[in-house]
Length: 117
Image (cartoon, rainbow, N blue to C red; front, side):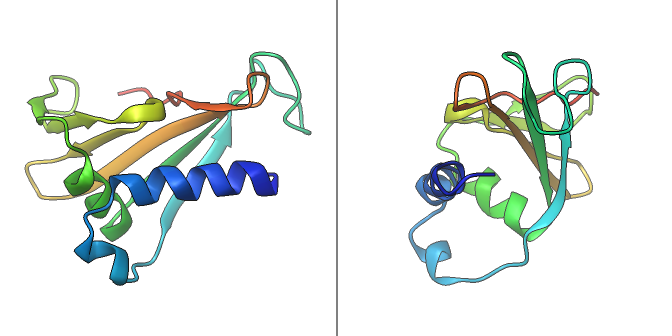
């Protein structure tokens, strides 16, 4: 990931966090995985998307910071919020949080990730 990409990712995260939460520090847990149909080992390809999935307290901060109204999501049964730049978060009935988004290398922009139900 380039410095420009990391800066954009951090800017996205900070715009979604409530002001009070910006002073808190939480562990960032999750995974990142490429779209293997469109990405080579160097993340090249015009349709290459690297998907990030964030879980736990960091995902909860993102979920709570998204201004959109939560709606029931049939696939998981949880409550879903969708933010800008492809950000997608779910809160389950068990109060667990997961967020995902992607980075499209060919377009050099954030986009929706490749998460399936």
